[in-house]
Image 1 (cartoon, helix red, strand yellow):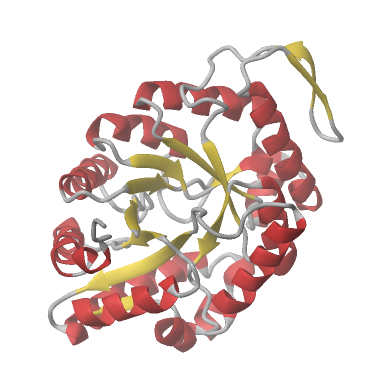
Image 2 (image 1 turned 180 degrees about the vertical axis):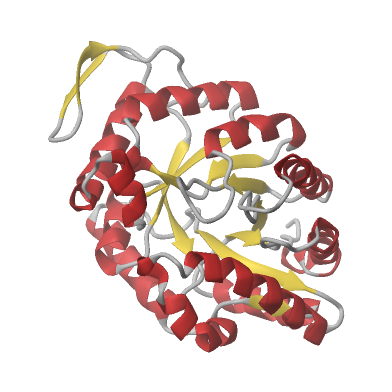
Length: 332
């Protein structure tokens, strides 16, 4: 089992951004020193929260993350030209010594697509073609590509990635058709863990596995990452009080987007069925339950807008001491 962190660089509008970024770097250093496996960054544009851009944040974190995997959770690929992303992430791969994962998704905020002058109707096609073209460029050969959205003729990437063939591409998806697409075009399904429905994970794992089989891909022995909200304390009630207080603020900002109005209407279900909050024993039980569906790489977000970083770091330390050791593999 692997455990990582989501470096949630989304800050309230009135926050001191310089201070917040400095504290975030210290938070990543804490995770590094506690032997967490990965750190992921966020991508949004023109949002309700201050959100420094993902490529810049990844570059900033390279020298503070030790040997942790560095990834995007997620990059809204349809808003970018794939040549740009192929070059940027090949560069990051070189700078990091080959520790990069490119996590991508189709996006969901109409405001972002409108601002870029890109139709949301094209996001699925742009995602698929983007991944195809990026992978061709990462071969470091002279290539041609012609699709509905992108075309290049006899060109070679300027900077080749360090990892042979390039970084793994994880595809975020929530509904049936996008999950099936993730199975066909991705190296892993980066599973959203915030559904308020108790049957979401078993239902969509089955959909993903069926699509893997149809695509001729293995079902067993593969990376299965999931993003989860997590907060623990030796006092379970304190953990729940802290998490709910700050999560409500964060999700209230999300709820201002029309596509996420359901956060407010289904809040109690979210608390009951999704959030990994409580004592070390309670959170360990939830990890074990989710692990039964095959998930083996948990990426946790353990702080939200306005929460003191000292509380988030305390959570990281307690998890590393009391929970993570329960899931370490015992040498044969």
